[in-house]
Length: 334
Length: 303
Image (cartoon, rainbow over all chains, first blue to last red):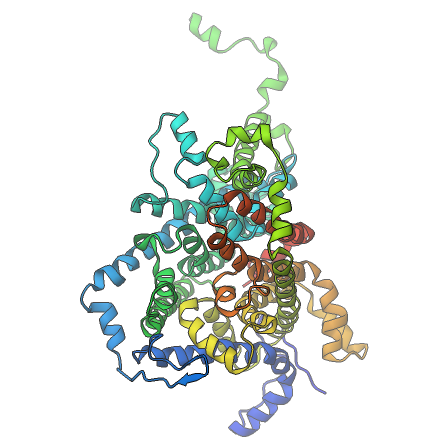
């Protein structure tokens, strides 16, 4: 049994022989790596059946006019055949430049970009600040860490529920603002404040992940680098700028990418905070869900087309992000 | 002339402790009393912000009337646990608890097992197709639910998995495993490669090496992956509300939603339910939290 395990460096161990025919190479690669393939098979099957097949099928749906009135369904004992038909790329055209496409797509698109940028920027800066504070030798820092991770530990639907109490008209936030003689906005009704509230809640919920990831990154920076910088007379800011930030680069590039993807697709917070009440505060994901499940008749095809557009945006973004990272000589850890 | 004397007092008057710049006297990583006070201040403020919404929910759940959240001051005088006893006695709470725990723990067990083998394979070997596979893992993170829910529903109903725990567990695994696998890959990367070799020299099969040597060493990483899987499954709303049809099989996330429509505006009861729901999740969290920091970024620090 030959099992070639090579290090994470990616170097092939042993001498590389001359290139052989494709079949032989396949065979020897199978012999060498059967074990790796065996280990990834479960994931490959689950992802294939539950993600890739639905994706292909979903793409097919976007080329039809399927909705809940013309798909196959069973009512009592009667089975009704599907009657939707193939309409090509009409759905995409309709979404992107059909009538009222600004209200249906572009306004949500812009808001989604703003939402993602604002949330990730806030997550990252606040998370980094707290991680830096927690990385000091400080009494009770384990306690602080445990408390501050709470927003991540409690399930989203519970915490968002708590936030709804607080943001409600006459809730504790407005009571506090009134006590301070500040204006009391209608958090859950006014479009601007709805968006503000959504970003606030998502920031609250997303900081712990960033904080812990960056804390792990900080702890892995070699302390001799700081000693050397101090010897050379670097100020605290210089040490942060030239030792801490470069040391965090690989963690940062990964968590920022994950943060962008997760925030862009953040379904739970907006859905739970507003339900079906706030059409203008819906980002693309929740809007797509609303098209497919929150209205009658359910428009499966348009909903899936929205999903495809979302996926396309993220894939394009990630490719550029990777290329940009590669140009700056760093690899994404994922 | 007189100014100079004031600004530079005679050396004899100086207290030596004042003149030495204080930072030299301290050990590295410690800061002055003022800086540390500021740090504590910020951290306490952040902790309060982190804890407040949850604490507020707990506080409101003690008020007996549905409008108490508008006059929270009145709750102090009439605190009661009635909401809790009502929720426990008159709703499907225990059914929801059972299905939530089955689904979350099932996802945790299956997901961590699958993610561990995957993470190990991609950590130790550069097999042909490696790059594509990693890209696929990242890609699955980007999938918006909207594009998946309809087709998934159809596949699950063809497999007879609608309204079954197994179906939901598989769906959650598909969403949680890619990140867990990546997390565990990072952790396995930090385990020296010599351990694998030693295992093989001693005659263990590759799977034996993995199960007997690597897994025990990777406990912090596994704990974090378990936490991530559990939280993902426990808190998910969209899939659960679409795929689970009978109300005894609802998970908490769906149960609480149905609660909102059924007991309209009974906010005190909803708060009590939410608190009860948060308890198992937080318990699980504090069970694994010791490992959270080391496990979370072992991967991110290495390319």
